Amino acid sequence: MNKTTISGTTPLSPDETAGLKLTHISTQAELNRFEQDNIASALDWVQKRKPKDILNELFIKLLHKKMFALVWKWAGSFRKGDQNLGISWSGIPVEIRKLCDDTSYQIEHKSYETDEIAVRFHHRLVQIHPFPNGNGRHSRLLTDIMLEYVFQRPIFTWCGAELRKADNPRKQYIAALKAADSGDIGPLLLFVRS
Figure 1 (cartoon, one colour):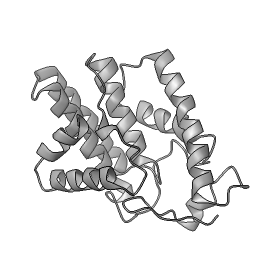
Figure 2 (cartoon, rainbow, N blue to C red):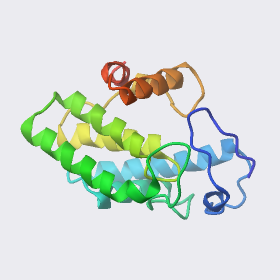
Figure 3 (tube, helix red, strand yellow):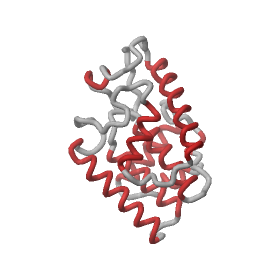
Figure 4 (cartoon, one colour):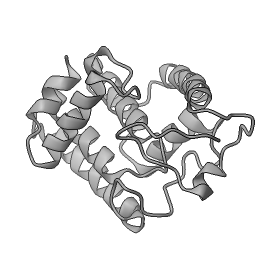
């Protein structure tokens, strides 16, 4: 496959690329189209299920699998190597458990407003970067599931953009994530509702 790397996306290792189920794909555009079709199927599954018990490793993996299983053999499995983004692969299960426990605590004790709990969850999941690919799309959908089915709040608008495209909204999103990496969650809070 002639894979073009978009700024801010995770390049795949040869082993991960070998996990492509659709061997006829030869361009990034074809890959994007098939992934988007799979994600649309996952959205249907979410809307039928209306999940509330989402803060656990099982659901996090299941959602990723529903989003990408028609395209990737490794869909729903945590990565097994280090990449240019994310924590060391060996710490993923522990950090996911800590993220889920911390977020459950924040919800129970109303530590922050609901949008801020969701944004902090999203940011930390992106930082962990648990899967070989699809982390941004997965974490945005999981955050929207939290808003809609756990908080009964409107989902984020994410600047109304397709954030896989290398354009200004994606640049704003990456900049907001980097600000959050430095402890300033404000730009990401503004971005998600813009």
